[in-house]
Amino acid sequence: MATDFSSIPIINISPLIAKSDDPKMAQDPCVLEVVKQLDKACTEAGFFYVKGHGIPETLLEEVKDITRRFFELPYEEKTQIKMTPATGFRGYQMIGENITKGVPDMHEAIDCYREVTKDMYGDLGKEIEGCNQWPRNPQKFKALMEEYVSLCTGILSPPLIPFPIKSCCKLARKIMRGIALALGGSPNEFEGQRAGDPFWVMRLIGYPGVSTVNGTNVHKNDIGCGPHTDYGLLTLLNQDDGINALQVRNKFGDWISAPPVPGSFVCNIGDMLNIYSNGLYESTLHRVINNSPKYRVSVVFFYETNFDTEVEPLDTWKTRANGTKKFERAVYGEHLVSKVLSNFVEE
Ligand SMILES: N=C(N)NCCCC[C@H](N)C(=O)O
Ligand SMILES: O=C(O)CCC(=O)C(=O)O
Ligand SMILES: [Fe+2]
Image (cartoon, rainbow, N blue to C red):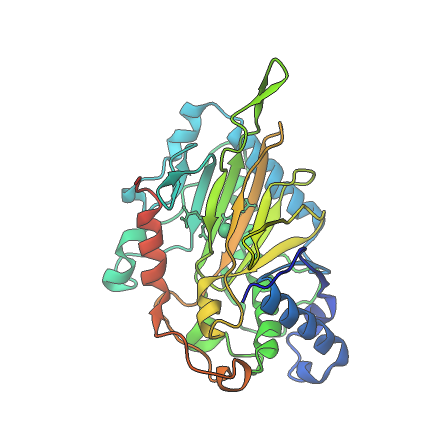
């Protein structure tokens, strides 16, 4: 549950990264120290920064730079990869096209999802069947983004090479092994049927800055992205340096800043982990307001469960959440599709 937190903790996860494929990881005191910090952050805020994650800082910068260069292109070029229902909701959407709870968001984005082939998940996956649309310009866009995501293949075949980790999927999986321990489970809780074949979503987002007319800001306080929770397990947010725009809501309803910490990811819990943890780890509301004059980009990677998995509280709720089971089952794919469809509906 969100508490009265007033800042977001920074966790150095390097011991977890080094040991997360070791069957004895749960006996390592340095891993357990990270697990303790993860538990505290997930319980109190549902948000934390990670450093010591092993993804090279140059790669974090490169994906943001190339995203920025794409958004600088003329509108006619960007709409060549326009997102429509026919493209499985993959591709470019212009400023104001994405809608959160009925209100248009002041951002433009490229939405990507793990590939869904025809009839892969029957009716459940129909709406988002398709493959991603990548722009021809800037060059190497597709290759770089695919490297960043690394397509999730083979992630379950240990041993992995510990450093440097080059993909968000691998990193998220490792953090989830720590979170599984934090919840009082085995490190493998989020593998196999639950998230052994993880779905993923990636949003490359651009938020225009406020423009100034005669020294006065116009459009002040426009919402870059309205208050929402994320849908899956764990989000890895690679945000622009130097612009303070992301805000997280605490239990008093105060909006707490999550300023950029160079070289780190901001991680937050999604709705499926909220259910698995029986509400102990909340998917916290957050929003984006870019009040700076500068254009802000973020590259957001969402690590999810298997698409068709049925999610319900882990047995550990009996000991950890000390109470009643608070959730019924949800199917992740249904949740995602209902969100995607409502993302384009104005109130
Ligand atoms: N895959 C994720 N979490 N995307 C977050 C986007 C949130 C805004 C969206 N319009 C909404 O209303 O959820
Ligand atoms: O751009 C950001 O900082 C956050 C974006 C976000 O919350 C999302 O896409 O779910
Ligand atoms: Fe979000």
